Image (spheres, one colour):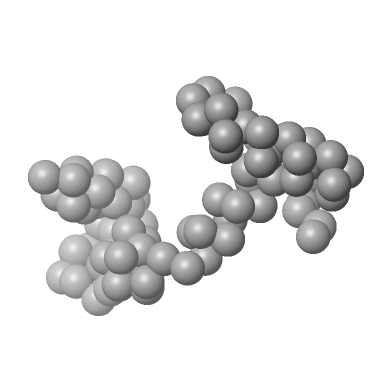
Length: 87
């Protein structure tokens, strides 16, 4: 699987020893890094999120609102929507 080269954000996670062993084995077998296996797995998981659970879906119709300043304040509206979803 080809993944486009972009700037990656470092993240630290803790996994179980059995997960690490399986990850090491799979990475060796596929001749890729553990990080690549994790990125591929995460991408696969994210693709399977039901559309209605995707946070981006809530902002799709924001442009149909009565807001006249959407192009200038879109970041603010998106942040407000995201905060409401986490409550």
